[in-house]
Length: 103
Image (cartoon, rainbow, N blue to C red; front, side, top):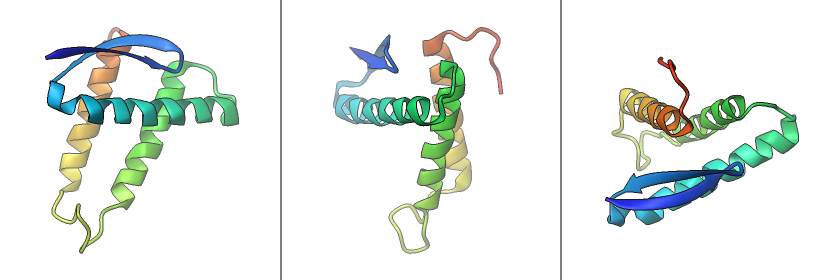
């Protein structure tokens, strides 16, 4: 595992990832950070947790809308998306350090 130091919405985080997945992780972090900054600026939403949830919902909606019978994600079940989203929520809770958060 490799340690990766990143900044999301102005806060620094240290994450661990497999070296082969580092570029994909950094790209995902850029997307999340850009989306969170846009939400914060456009909606004037306060609270990083609310901003993160709104960004996650937007990104998940986009991901789910990409499914098409003939598309590259045609064989991916909605349950798989839900599990991945839940895993991301759990990872965010651990990184942000929100005690007692469960779904």
